[in-house]
Image (cartoon, rainbow, N blue to C red):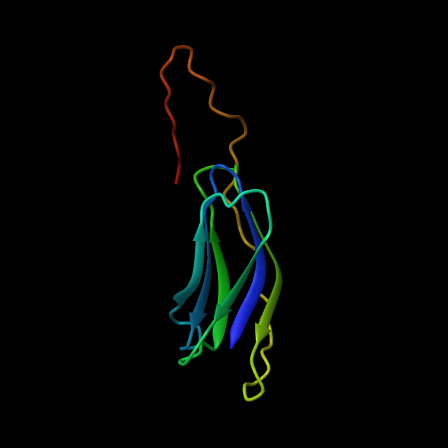
Length: 120
C-alpha cells in the first residue's frame, strides 16, 4: 500500500518530520519517511510506498528545531490500500503539547559577544 500527503516546512530553525509505521500494535515504530530542515516557502508532495511486512499503525511525528522560527504543516493525507487490503480507519490522537514560552526574551548583549541559552 502507499501513503501520500502534502507538507510545508519553512523557517530558519526547522526541525524534522517523520512518518513511522508499527507492525506490533504500536509498541515499536520504524521510520518510513523523513525530512529535515528548511524546505523553502512552498508545499511539497510525498508518496511513500510500503511493501511487505506492512505496518498496522501509522503516525506522523514532528520534532521542532532549536527556536520558534520554523513552521511545519501537513495536509491531504491519503492511504491507498489496494483491493485485497482492509479499509484503514483513522484513530484520533491527543493534540500536541508545547513547552511554555518565556515571558520576555533575553536582553541583547551590550558588547560584541553573543551568548545563547536553551532550557530543556
